[in-house]
Image 1: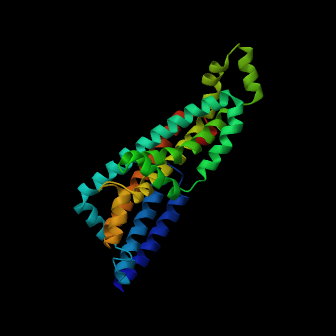
Image 2: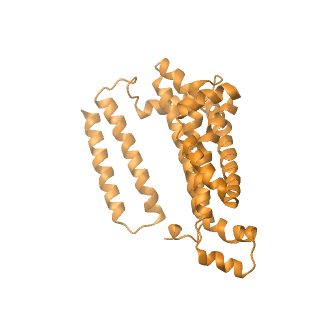
Image 3: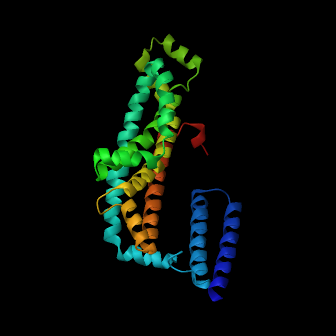
Length: 279
């Protein structure tokens, strides 16, 4: 009963504090404090609910148990992080986004490619990962190379579509103005169209951050060496080591949030002139 009361008090206190913060003048401190307070409130309520209702650790381990597992399994989590995030997700992300950007330039240069390639791209992007991942594992082996290949396929077409649309996001008046200055295709591309496309490009990059991590983890379910987040989650579920499963999930969530947040900060620095970045 004490834990249940603690959870209720934490929820009421956290909600009241967030309401108070929401009424304060908007600043960087208040914008950061609101999600922090909400997250801490959820963790305290989670801990209190598990202990107060006596929920089995197999169904839902308490946050304190997950934290203890993370502390005791730091080397394993780090090895899995390097295998999945650094080698698989990040490598595939860079290769896929770079290939999509170059392809978008070519597609923009030759209109028949846009009309022929993009429908095929939409078709490939709709293919389920559980169908393509086993095939790529057979093609590229069980190590991180096959996971990077899955990530390339997952991030390529969202990045391609956003970049192509961004390159077309200029008005006829702007293009006519460049022609009056005797600017050729490449000068117009570098001076006008690429800067105008940056919000679209970063939108594709941000979408690809989450897709890359999901693709790398899911691909490891279909074959991997004895390390990696997907491998550890699948084997730990079979061994009923749910605290380790949740520890891997927490690491993946932190890595994905940091990846997305870093890309958002880079977008803000590059596209500071865009209306979406003002205020």
